[in-house]
Image 1 (tube, one colour):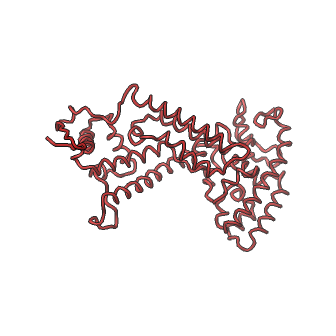
Image 2: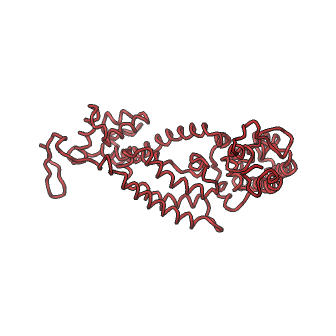
Length: 401
């Protein structure tokens, strides 16, 4: 009979695990649901307090607000998620997910129907499903590193053996195995140990070093998996067609500019289908207007009024667009690449609504170009509003006559 040392005492446990009666958490009715309700309520309260502080007339930079959310609110959502996360139902995780999505929508000043995939991608927030997956696999590595002489290590290995025998269907180990299979790391499950570091002699690898490497590996591989899932989800959403092409902003300061500039704030709405263009307004109308009939009412092109059409094509704003491009050329000067010159020549929508082309420029030049583009968007939208409201009910930009 093995001995498990706990402080100064000795605990003797029968080898037959079924008589041990130890589980990592209560399951079934009234198991984790009560705790998750408390976690959701606490995180919701903390989120509202934070949102009140960081938004408003003197709003903090978006990146700073997101950092505060991760530091002050996320811990309430994720406390001990390495244990309960794998056992949590999809609907329960969605409840927790709504807390951070609501916060993101308030930061971006977009309406409550804006796709959660956009909010997370634009602000760099991982989904709760991704976070609990990482926590579960990190905890698996921690348990695998424990010797069998420790109680947790003993229980862990016997529970894994039961899962291999197709028992323990409600076990945490069963869910951990599924998470490992999802990132093609069945070898770690079979070995029941933290994998060695590649391209490094095993005799030089301490257990602490292996655990650190395992945590980094898990984060990278799980993020790759959920990044692919997110991109597939974005492709399914018609409102995010443009964003799927542009991708999230990566230029330093590009996102934060939305706090100070109305044109940059408008651009965020254009990127996610949250601006009252005919494409979106027609989709919300009762009855819904067929997409091919959601034509721009401000020009004679006969094209559907999308964000790309407004920014790069509509003849109503041709003079403002030409002046914007003239100023951009003056700011960029001889530093522009061939790709950027081509984009300016054809007034590419990616130049007005994305940041990829600007990332090729020196930081300050890119920010100056960004400000010029945002000025154009603001001026064009201000010109559009009285023209558009001739087709709307009162001052409601989302209701057609």
